[in-house]
Length: 191
Image (cartoon, rainbow, N blue to C red):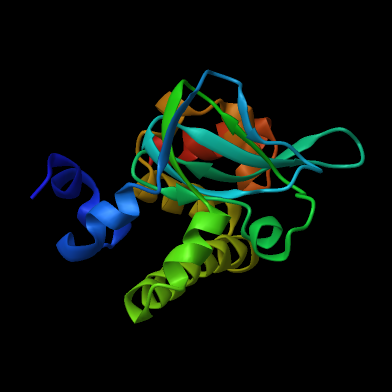
């Protein structure tokens, strides 16, 4: 088995028999700090995978404020699925917080894999389900949990987040002000 399969096979959820076919479709790129993968009003053409680095998905609202939607860390998939699926202009920006190495799969290459058989159709279904469940979880966090619980959940899921991401972006992600985030952190630290 190849070194690439050992590193990425289970993360991509591709078996050894199909891995080389899949891996040959990937494009490897590096984004420098603050470089965009996707900008609002552009169209998303790729499903991305963070090999190494940190990215942030965010939206600029009508007041010019940016609202963090998600963070993408090592070994995570990311995309603007609505833009990719429906060939629509994106409402999101996806930007590197730090220098980031990515694997990209173009949507046309994914479609070609689908035509090769049931295995790839199942792969596509699983990938779509994963992206859907991630988005659903994000919405549920905002609807069902208090800011303090959202903060606690985020720390459990991404313990290094405060080393990787600026506090104002984390506050925006949690739907609170930076001042509220500071108060929550102090309360949790004291207790």
